[in-house]
Length: 377
View: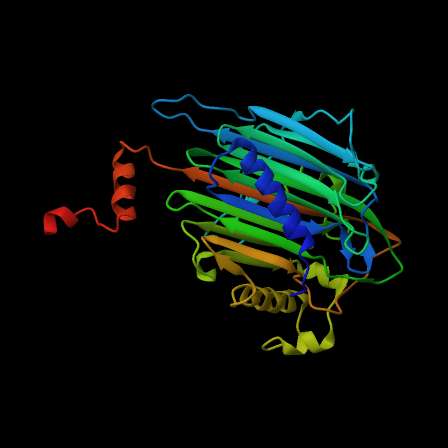
């Protein structure tokens, strides 16, 4: 794991602002961010554009009406150290946000429709360290959020997504998608750094976060900029890393973590020989699919090992993590490739109403009492 606290602190600060603004308690939370770069050696902070998507919905109860979807929507832009007077307006979008589905391998679920979007924003709008742009969707106690921020020169740009709830029943999501172009004919250090945070508030609560990358060598059916519009076919991504949890989080075993590497990515990603030979069963005669499977298994095991996640108070945090070992190189096929990376976050709460049978069961469990406990005395 490569230390980097900047992205996690940025995400944590935004969560604090989102929660404290409404003075409500934090229930479920998901956050993911990714350094705006091909790798540590190639910062792409101001190149190209970035798009933001968000969604929120609070379900109706027997006593309250549905709120949303996307009841309150806002866009914020801080450029050259000053709030912009001409921040773009968000628009409804049919693009649904993909997130890992807890308890399944490589299966994704999608948020509701419509989402709200701010698309194709020039990253050059972020000029000095601390500049940022964000999109927020709030419906009652549920908030989805996507952002891009410019860090110090040593960090470059960091983009991410946050979804939070403060109780009740509903869901929220955020997504940021960052396409750009990478010249061919060179090899680039490839260690994209990510942060993630997962927290649930018990029974009926789900939180998911993911990061991923795609380029025009593996995704050939359309322009890379349209990857999400085309339904996010992750079978044609370079790689993706997702984490989710349902119910309380007290140890790494409560997290469902999945890393998937596209075998075709091995035509462009070069791993250190020492790393490859450290993989159990590795042989140079293996096919790309076989090597990719070994890397998947090694990464899943690494992400399930103690010390990678920090878990406290029902929250699991992953800070400054790269899915790729030091010395990994990215060599784009051809004279140039279109490259993109994304970060998504999602929460869903289905908290039973206090008077329902399910609500009574939750109350009994919370008291440490099984349904038949009174009868057994």
